[in-house]
Image 1 (cartoon, one colour):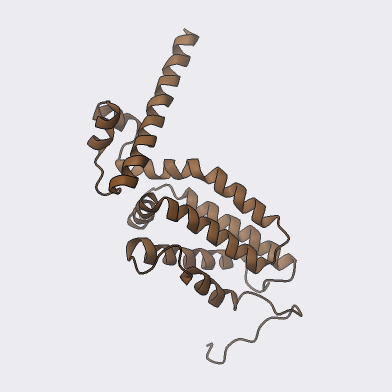
Image 2 (cartoon, rainbow, N blue to C red):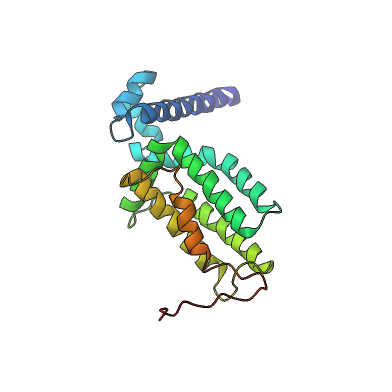
Length: 213
């Protein structure tokens, strides 16, 4: 009986993995919007009802795909956090590595972003965004402890600000298509923002601009 149960669970895992692998390939080939559930099920020869046993909607595949990519990305974030580079360089490196992931999975990233925007008043898996913000908070706390980041604003508020810059950049690239994820635009936006976050070399805060209310 136990062996039968194990075989059943293994079959479920094999089917789920096949759906995810096939969907990711089709999304890359045709785009998320142009891929139907039928395209996925036909490719791996399963019934559409079987697909919906695993994923109630096609959109529910997207968070699962990012769940699988998060461990490698988080490992890279930890390497950056523990490096001896300045906080400014660390922030740039985290943004660059995250943008690279989005660029390599452009159709999936676009779908994830659009579905999060469309689901603001619904339950939707925001684990990627929450992990990104939490890690930025840890990095900014490190910068505050080291005297590189201003301390008069909580790290979580600064992290939310930086997350917003990254999200708007990705929206401009993937939704509005105003620039490419590999462009220098993100670097320039970050530099403008960091001017207000970083402390001067002597540890004192920068003077606020004269037009600040």
